[in-house]
Length: 80
Figure 1 (cartoon, helix red, strand yellow):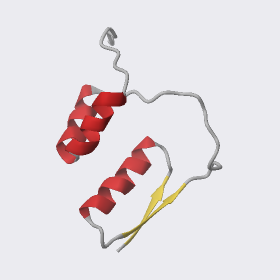
Figure 2 (cartoon, one colour):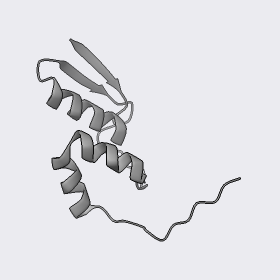
Figure 3 (cartoon, helix red, strand yellow):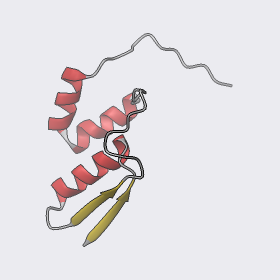
Figure 4 (cartoon, helix red, strand yellow):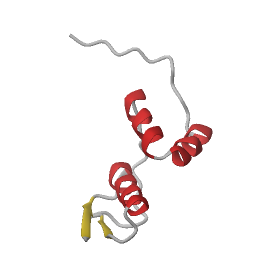
């Protein structure tokens, strides 16, 4: 099966990598509109629920992330 992933951000890249890991026979291609060297200087914030999903789907990647990512545990979210 041929799969086109639109967007080379964290979600698109992780989806492509996980799909290829789960289905090596699939032809997975990522399309990104920005140039390869473009950077935007922002971080990626992942919720505990998202991290739990990554841990469930790919424990090896989760452990690497846990060793190298910075965590901000002192954030409170208030909403109405």
